[in-house]
Image 1 (cartoon, rainbow, N blue to C red):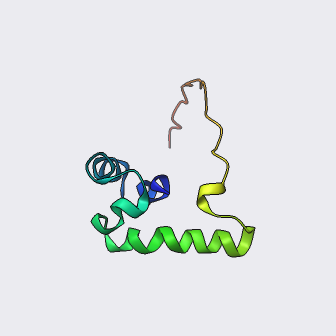
Image 2: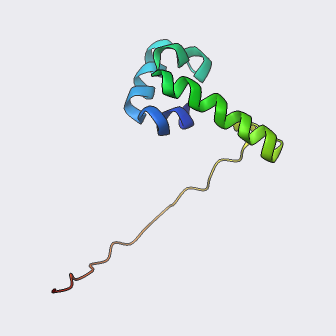
Length: 77
């Protein structure tokens, strides 16, 4: 759940709270903005209702191991 909180409140903010206060969303929730405190449980509830699962049980997305940069020319107007 910290990843969902980071999406809502910002990765740096959540990382700093985790470094100082704990390892779970429950450990740091009171230190995050109120909108994040409400967002994460709401998203978890939606997953439980719709998918029959929780945030902790979701599979982690696959990692992108490589990518290629390409140059795209601009169009002249």
